[in-house]
Length: 222
Image (cartoon, rainbow, N blue to C red; front, side, top):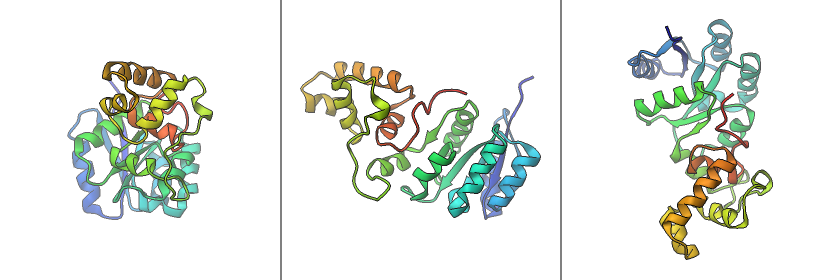
């Protein structure tokens, strides 16, 4: 018999917590083991229940991100999935570096929530496209940033770096091909190579890595 994914939900509002619980527990492989309303609750629940994933309102983390980091260090089986009310939260880049593994908008579907919980349980990262798009448009000072940091991208060829620098801007394969006078099929081949070399699952994660918003190898399983 497979072990269920143990999840805890942390949010100020009981009605929202109950909604998340209901959406998750419709799936036989997920069990919501606890609820809370504060970062302190999250730490206590991590200690008492050792959930695989803690779904927590990003505003609750706020300036207490050190507490969240401590939770992850003490209970490595637990991954934090932050829920944001608006894309482009200033805490997102800092939280990613400190150990938060997933971000979703509060308006996300129950299906995306379930898929993200499962992904985090597999040791992966996930950032909602709406959040990722905001992050890619700025660096930590708030200035526009479209040129990737080459340090984690040393294995890429010059052409792949050129393609990735355009991909960061949210362009499709067809649009990239048009800019570089290459066929869409050729761009698709290069993008596949880029994903493999960066060890990421998709274009969003590749763009985040290029923009310096996620650590290298974010899609590797632990």
